Image 1: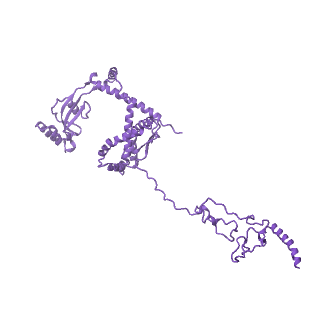
Image 2 (image 1 turned 45 degrees about the vertical axis):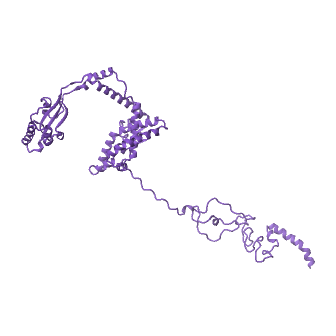
Image 3 (image 1 turned 90 degrees about the horizontal axis):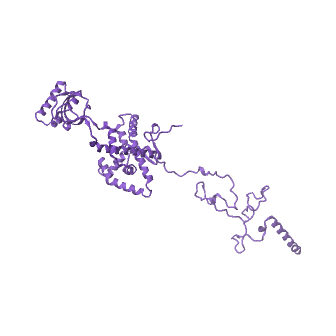
Length: 461
């Protein structure tokens, strides 16, 4: 019997090995014990544990259908999962990446799984609180633009906030805004011309030299203009001046910038406009005869006045008695100015009743006008009645009507010609700048004539 088994064994062994190779189970039929002979309590790492299911080997007790590998794992050595660049602490990762991806040789967990929250449903970190809403600063609105330069309300009307505060409640907001716009419309053209000239200087002066020009003018501001500002606003120090500037809606730095631009514009105009051109004798003579009426001088007089107003007395008789006493005091030797300061009701009583040069026909009261040019010099007039009161006058100096001769008028003629020529050249220069540099104002929509910006507004389509 033993001989038969020995003879059958080689054939049976070969057949069994061939079947195992075909089934991919060669490793399981190798005659190696799970526990090593040296130490039966320690598992042999080279031999798989038959108690642990191997997902690479189909389970004959389970019907897998056409696919014997239900988890998509092809038999072979298990591979490590590739490293993913996304960190475990990124938003949308509720658990570490190693826990999210099971090892390749482990089957997916069975049973119901908790629903995973999508990344967009994860709670967001606390954000910074939003900044408060922007508050409009009084006077910081843009009134005009000249090229890249802006002109603010406060640049044209400093202290606009104080102006509004002083009149708030006295007039309606609509009336107040209308009055402010009238003032702005009146003063804005001068600021636009200054900006135009400054802009022309800035674009013409080499860029590497312009900072030095600004620094030089800024030093002039610190040396001269700053002292004048402190005196004008009655500030005790620079810091106090800055506080007052902030109350008015501006700043000392902005005042310095305006001074630099204004001074540079004045200096630049002198280089662009001829202020000292030659004026010939023939030009002066022609100007004299073309403007003869300008050299006609009406009669004029310089005089003193005593006055009483009817409104301060119960009747004219009482008023006449009062002015008679004043005239008698002057006749008695009291200085005319002293009597006027003590008793007169005239507009120049504080100045001793002295009146400046007055031309013939310029006074409302005809009696006063006739007395001025008919009364002997340094003599008191009789009591003269006017519409508002009674008067006593004394003429100090008088000049008869006449015409200034050409010889006496040459200095004035030369100044007039130079002034007219300068104004004409300046207008032409500024108009040329307005054609080259874009100008916009808040009045452009209403000002179709272009009187503010110097450009005619185009009609809207």
